Image (cartoon, rainbow, N blue to C red; front, side):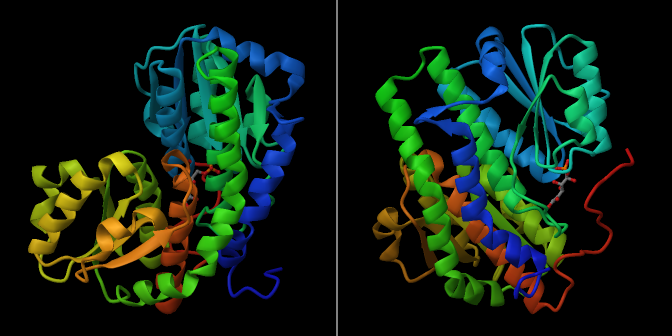
Length: 366
Ligand code: F6R
């Protein structure tokens, strides 16, 4: 049951700290990352020179973050592709490619077909799944489980954050196996990951502030989310959450792309969520925020607590300060804030949060 929560989505948002602690317990053995299969996954991780990640929807967004991390910490060519497109694409795969399929249910037909194609072409196939024993697990060479427990709400929440956690562990393991990261850097990274569950609990603790911001947009027809780098990747998922359960047309844009078209949509009163958690991108993001403010946008800014001072002088927009982690790990608190925001918009509109129109939890038709 919902254990006192109004909706499964609210329950599942709240389950994230526990689910993430569980992954860390499962995959950290005596302080180092152990991906299981008695070292067989490690062996796979030392032999590829390209990565291709394929999934749908929220799992695709987690895969995009995986791509970002592989590029950042391994410096190898990586691409993400939508499963539905991959099936017909001419993407080059070979025996030196690591192919990763990501799926909560493990039953999504497009993702399964993509995996079959990759296997046929000789790629090493890894799956990141939540449901044990699902169809995709029987096709992949190895499966890393998110073990988030059953996700009932159609809008995916804990599946996403646990998929992210798997990608952090996978890429860090890879980087340390290949000597791309010192022991000290790895330890520092793991320290940040261990702080993630508490950081999420802290975001849940400021839910009233997030709720107040959500109330401002329940009548809106369009909403835009802007950010750079990792923030942009998180916003893609945030915008999907909001559109699927609140029916507000919401789109994420890379902030630097705004002036190449989308800024034409910003007029007086347009709601915009700007995310700026990446220290080196703050000044650029600030100038984008100024541009949209000048066109009348109502801006809510997501940043981290320690960067708040860079923005707080302005009373022109509302600032939400997220708990401080190193920039590379801010994706976790950031998405939880956006999950809560979407949840409140949907609930306050009186919609069926857990069962949005036209959507099914598992998509078994192409
Ligand atoms: C969005 C959502 C969908 C799924 C997608 C893939 O909240 O739930 O976008 O993420 O249908 O499903 P799985 O992960 O089961 O392959």
